[in-house]
Amino acid sequence: MTVVTRFAPSPTGFLHVGSARTALFNWLYARHHGGKFLLRLEDTDRKRSTEEAVSAIIDGLRWLNLDWDDGIVRQSERMERHAEVAQRLLKESKAYHCYCTPEELAEMRDAARERGSPVLYDGRWRYRDPSEAPTHVSPTVRIKSPLSGETVIKDHVQGTVTFANQQLDDMVLLRSDGTPTYMLSVVADDHDMGVTHVIRGDDHLNNAARQTILFQALGWTVPEFAHVPLIHGADGAKLSKRHGAVGVEAYREDGYLPEALRNYLVRLGWSHGDDELFTTEQAVEWFDLNHLGRGAARFDVDRLQNVNVHYIQRAQDDRLVEMIRDRLAKRCGRDLRDRDLERLKAAMPELKPRSKLIPELIENSLFIIHDRPIEIDEKAAKLLTLDAKSLLRDLAEVLETLEDWNQSTVETAIRGYVAEKEIKLGSVAQPLRAGLTGRTISPGIFEVLTILGKEESLGRMSDAVKA
RNA sequence: GACCCCAUCGUCUAGUCAGGUCCAGGACACGACCCUUUCAAGGUCGAGACACGGGUUCGAAUCCCGUUGGGGUCACCA
Image (cartoon, rainbow, N blue to C red; front, side, top):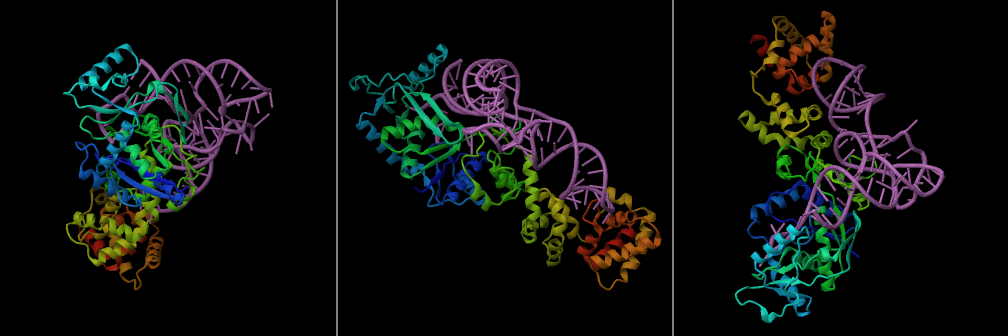
């Protein structure tokens, strides 16, 4: 049997990181088994579903490189089919019309709550004769749920979960306006799409029981379930807006690399021994349902950041330059020249280990593209004392004579200079750093000299001495 | 409230299904040190957990029961 999984978000907002992880798990499981991963938009709530949300979800999936097979299924386009399924149940006497008004149902719920009994529909129209039906009320269609016994779910994560059928009432299949409910749509679509494995959030565990009843009433094979614990915020509650960034796009904007978010997300709630950092290929090879955790996991930004550091260090220099060039141009108010791009690329190996996030990489890159005379910040200015300036003036004369300007010649010259003067390298490196970068923090000083080149370096030194 | 799920360092987790090799391993974060021209990166070391109480057993983080704690779900929303 070919494995078919699906990701079925309702397009009512951004792609939530929890949903992204669900999508990732489904994708990994399908790819691992050489099966299919399908995308279905549960957009039957026309009030809340928006096209913006649809594109946000698609953009998010694309950014994370989660590709789906076949076309996108829009649940809203399948309403006729859903209604047809309900009609079949009606014909087979497995469902019935319910003429309760919303007010009547509200009363029923309130009463049940007061009594402390489960809040369920009492089935009053299940056996009532249709001739008693009020003419002014258009009915809903409800399923005849088993009155006794148990519904058992074999879940790959939670194990065997048993529900007493008395806890499961006759749910609505078709609303009074004839539109299908979520419960019906999901079952019909999962069946029609040939879904074999439903991997989704823990919050659907209760629904799995109701859906099982529907599957059975329809005589369809119940898919296998894997209910994954939800992602919690730092306080231990379901991750929501009040915890800060919950949308994938927010992490994209904050400068996380997609492969970092992916790696972090798979590892959150799933494990493969002590492996922490691994490639997508490895994840596909290793992923299984047996090693999904059973308890909820908290979203830990520190950890994500650490993973991001790992991937930034391993990212191609060209790719990083490409990622930062637009924002860099905006920051310095002009387009980048070829020279800038060359210097940036040359500097990347030095810049990468110093940047946890893309915005930080941009900050750390700025000194390279600034035009002379560069701005010297307060801390750096303090290092440029009179003594320091005269040191730099001397040093400039030495560097001036260098024919070859590369890291080793520059280093030899400077080390030779400090040895001769019997001073510490730091006493010249720090003022030099201040003059060349305008800051007290930068890559290694020899690297900086090499990145900037002879002309620019000596120019900046002379600016610093004059200032 | 009813129903369902969960419970190992602050956090993510290995180990739990097939009890002994676990006075519990790794990673993040934290602290110290090393390296060192600044800041990172890197390296070494350190502190840090089986929620509690009962069983079962020669032996329990691992099995059973209970308690406590946390979470989720209870719509003509998905």
